[in-house]
Length: 118
Length: 106
Image 1 (spheres, rainbow over the protein chains, first blue to last red):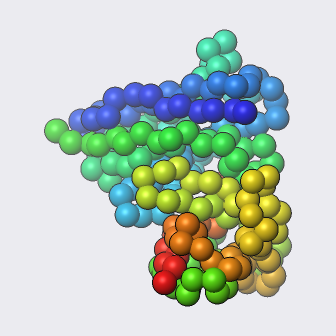
Image 2: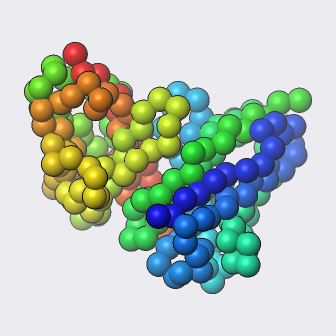
């Protein structure tokens, strides 16, 4: 069974770049059956999809975040990563990585809280 | 951009049937997926492609989708079903989530 684990700094200063990595275990990120997404959830609010990456390296991003987001994949490390630039307090949230086989998110990481504060 | 509308909260008596709706323009033409999220935990897929249950999800969970409304139905509600439920679709290569509905089991 596929397992995902987010890692990265829990505190980021305003205007800096948030960087997170998701490590996939229990299966190969290159299997071709999945695409790999980042999703976030501010405290007390709903889920917001950030974007996804395919094993080819191609990406789709949420239009509302597109100008600030980069998602990449490293098949040799079985990882994919998120970079969100120019962060503000509004980017404070629990960030999840997730996999999707047929357009639904069937495996999720446990989530990691990222706080934007000076 | 496409929007999904969910009620903030729904209450159901123990053992009764809960219905949680997700509204969207012509949502019946899309595949709708539902997630359950308990406090402090990651979401869990409970229904995919409108009405399909992943393995391990009780038969009490069912889904339907038509017109402008998709519905998640939880029969014989249990205390353990108390959670937030979110619907999700894809629109123009973008995943869209509803705001989530908090289910309270009385």
